[in-house]
Image (cartoon, rainbow, N blue to C red; front, side, top):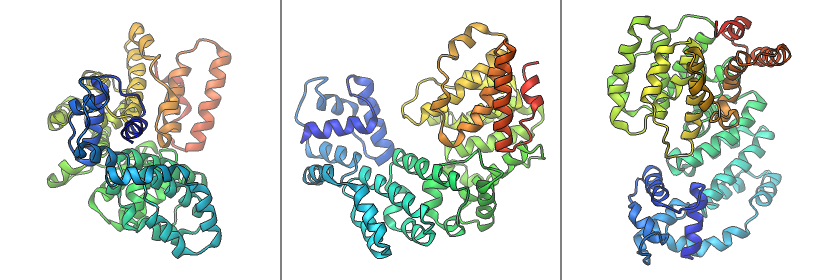
Length: 414
């Protein structure tokens, strides 16, 4: 069973463990998701990279928890059974019976592993959403088993993106869910729908802001509504953060607040604001998440000073797979910067790294609009320009943000 456990850990991190860097990655991810320490040297020994030894029970229990079990014994007892479960069939039958108590019981009892549990929730909620059974969805998200802290961040991303895409398709959110803390934490705050700030998502932000359920949620909503104002060519208000709450903000939200300040700041204050922010977060380790929102903000503002600052402060080394999405936005910003500054050599290098398909789902159309601006100004054939312009106009009309005018496309690099 230990060999199976080792393979399950590799599945969890999405790669084979073959060197010291991989072992450090496992150690760091476990610390981040479980707040439990396991040294990289222990992982190295477990995978036979140095002096392979039989792991102790503490190591086995931590690894079993990492892949979603209570401990190693729970893993040993349930792993084979887990493989035989056909979650889809179970859920379809339970939903078809239309008995809420049976569905609630299914959620509470089917937690053999968090991987299975996340899949269960996704399939179940999507089924109930199609049936527009919002009261039952509300009940499910009110369960203790769906607390944000019961999932790893990787699992929350999987949950938020899978359900978020369905919500975008339906283009509406039931008011019940906008007062549900677990739903907001696991879905709404994860799938930040930049394509729908003028649609259901923006309407929901206004309600959440008014409800004022929790400080960070109110701040989150306020920040995105102000960003929507910017995209509508309206005045942007500076958001003041309580000093006691600054340290507890999510890195991306922290960067979003900074972006708003830069949108409305005097040009001669830009570097001063950036340096003060960098000083406040410099002890945080990898800062990519803290600067994530600024990558696109600097493109929107066509601000070479901000771009240059970010290039000098951003590490290209990422430890967690979700940070690859952040790095992808960084590459796009670099393309704009090197084109604006006439650095063809670096522009040619960076263009190999940017991939639109690796953007976060909820940002993809928004990023695509920016990328089309770059492509339009990077082609010389009139036929190709015409196609890109048509795509840009179609997407701009869909998102309905007045900032993305035809002039923005045509004159960006003038």
